Image (cartoon, rainbow, N blue to C red):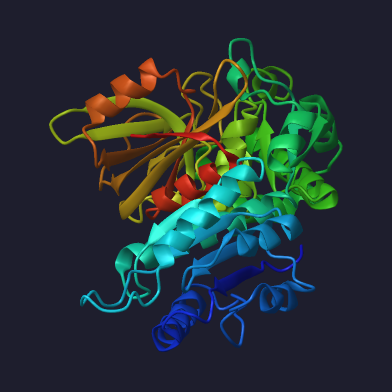
Length: 446
């Protein structure tokens, strides 16, 4: 994948107070490079369209931070838009002095001119921030848009896999390959679950010994699983790992029930758990947009994420419990229990993960959802992961939400969101909103 390239474009005209403009330019460069060292910044202010053209020559940005150091007319933004089709963050500087004297920058009027041009060029979506380089809101906006643009670029190199199809009644997780490519730039390939099952059945015990040893090292209590299921799990883990590696898969959504119980005799839950710890976003119940949501969360947080259903709420502590049958990444397990292996709660066959997840002080709940008309939307909520034991057989995580949990549940149910959500470590609501803005999606902020 090509390296992420954000570009700073500070424009103006020489008829304003250039000492103030130069000071703002230098402070802005420092902020941008502190947020992302790869920011490309000019050596000087771009005080004419000719200077701007020279600076843009040969560049291929993944994000443009367009800043009016002073007022500049629409020709400056037009020059940018005719060359590039990438996310734009429009940044207005605060007027440095109001003393009844000269208007030093007039950055705000320039922002109106630039924004009007953005709308005229096909109504391109863009972000906006107002303030001086030292203001917290400015740093947050720059950081959020930089993170979002990096995720958007990386998506264009993502290859996903659909392993089997969704069970009856789980159609919300289905996706068309053309739709994923057209909307997100993501490549989707499909393979039947039986193909991986047949691959697994073809391995000998010795072929899969190292995979069994890896599972023993990453989990606790695997020895309580019958030997046949342990060995069949190791075969399945090898099949999935080799498929992912040979096909360059970064995220997958796998059918799980009933096939892996009826046709194979051993669940795929722990395989998906281990894939998530190997930096492959792996969702169960063949939920493609759930897997893509996981991948986004992993790109933002740099860690495995939890994938599950909202199953219980507590109004008194404003908490919401997320749970699933047993595919959470081993690294998410509570430190006092470790990644305990048990059985699937319905089929009573193992190995499946069976633990409560560790607490963390900042959490983001996320889902890429679809409206009935096929348009996309983001669900975003924030809070903290509480120090709670396992809530039910399977894997669980309890989140105290910033907004009242009952209200969040009632409104998201009424809005018709899908039943699978992602929980990631850290607060990334601003970056997710910026990403939605770059795609032109609606946002539901819980």
